[in-house]
Every structure is written in C-alpha cells, then in structure tokens.
Amino acid sequence: MLPTAIFAQLGWIYFWYAVPVAAAISLVYAATRHEEIHLIFRHAFGCATWIVGLMAVVGVVMAVVSAWL
Amino acid sequence: MSAQAEPERVKTIELKDPAMAAFLAWLVPGLGHLYQGRTGKGILFLVCILGLFLYGVYLGGDSEVGWGRVVYMSFHPEDQRLHFLCQAGVGLPTLPAVIQAFRVRGGRAPLWGSFMAPPRLPSDRSSNRPTLDDLHKRLHHFFELGTLYTMIAGLLNILAIYDAWAGPVLDESIKEEKEDEEKDALAGEEKSSSASADAKSSEPGAETGPLSDRH
Image 1: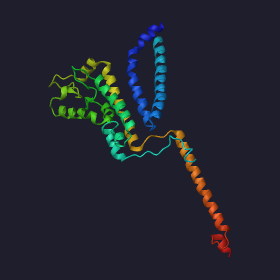
Image 2 (image 1 turned 135 degrees about the horizontal axis):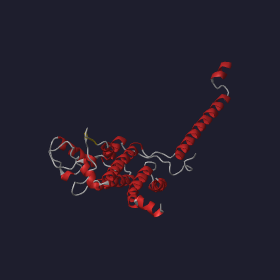
Image 3 (image 1 turned 45 degrees about the vertical axis):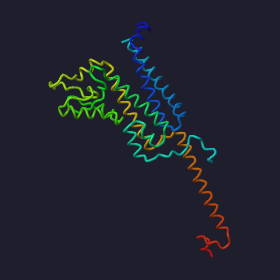
Image 4 (image 1 turned 60 degrees about the horizontal axis):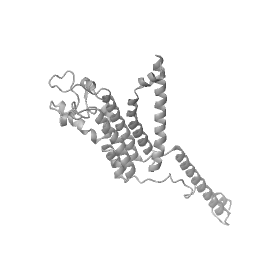
C-alpha cells in the first residue's frame, strides 16, 4: 500500500483533538510536582513531549500494521 | 547541608486550611489554590481543567439536541452512566446534570434547553426527547470526544485537590537531598552529644555512672 494511502487512513485532522488533552494533562501533572511556574512549564514541556512521542510511535505502528491486515 | 547551599527548589510552602482548600478545589478547579494564595497555580488549574471540561461540553452537544449532553447523571439499569463518576470530579460545573437527573426522574421536563439532561430511555414513550442512540447518531464521534474530555477534566481535578490538600509532590532527587540533610543533622547531633559527654567525663570529680561507681 502506498504511504499516502496509509496517511489518508489515519485521518490526521482527528489528531488535533489530542493537543488540548495532552497540554492540559502535562500542565496539571507538572503543577502537582512543583510550586514555581517556570519549573512547572519546564516539566510540562518534557511531559508533553513524552505523550506526543509515545502517541506518534503507537500511531505509526498501528498504521503500518493496519496497512498489512 | 547548610542553608546557603540548599537548592532554591526546596522550600516550605504554607498551606492554609488544607481541608477547606481541598473542598474549594473540588467545588471549582483552582479555587482552593486561590484561597491559599497560590494564585499562579490556581489560575493554571482553572484554565486547564475548566477549559478542558467546557470544551468537552461544547463538543458533546449542539443547538438542536441541546448542549452538554455528554455530562448527565443516570444510574437506571437501562442507562448506567458511570462516566459521570469521573466527570463529577470537576465539582460545581456538573451541578446542572444532578438537577436535570432529579427533574427527569420526577417526571418533569428538563430545564435550560436540555443542557446536561439525561437522554430518554428506550422504554420511555412519554416524550419525544432524543435517546442515547439518537445522540450518538447526531453527534457522531464528538459524543465520545466530549465524554473523554469531561472525564479527563474530572480526573485531573483529583490531582489538583490533592495538591491543595498536601502541597506538591516532591521529585525523587529533592527527596534524596532532604534525606541526606536529615542524616547529616542526626550525625551532627550525635557527634556533639558524644563530645559533650567526653568533656564531662574528663572533668575531675564528674559524677558519671561508671566513674562514680569506682569512687
């Protein structure tokens, strides 16, 4: 299957709905670990990177698997 | 470790009336922190949690079927909305769902254009309000998205409530530093007490246990 077809299957538009959730989870989680605002934002950035990275890896694996099923 | 060498991150936080702050934090996200004077975190919790909840309410409804249809209370065997247990973590913003549930159970029509009203049960033929299936058909995946957003908002507020109650959870590195400090302080105390005991025992005529026995 062509890569473009794989990407079309993913429905990229729906991934945007994950952005507010990832941002809110990261910020709230970080805020329960620190008291200083700059430390909260630093921790939240790292946390959001992990969440988005993990979602990207899972998304790519699922797309590749679904292309061969 | 001396006070000067102490990292800036480790500092005592004054938590004003933790029980009241936790209750206020449940009532409105961030309110407990604002009550404690932790304004920055209060605003952050308010914007993140309440923003996520309101966005979910917006996604889970429209002008035709009513807004906020994803947040409703129903524990009827035909429609057990267990999601509400998570959504209720947001507190006061879910109060309309409770009011609507009691009204509908009492056989009265829902208020406010069916805002947060439970859907009609399939067995109920007394009105033409939409059933849960109708809501799914009308809102498609936005019903699931709205449900997810509002549930996550409620669960996140539990973290915020704990933070208002007990303060921030320290990093492991900071915990280790604190433990080291306590160990150093204990070792220092032991040293000073043993040194003072030695000094006393070396004094002539000092009445310590074993030595006085010898006299």
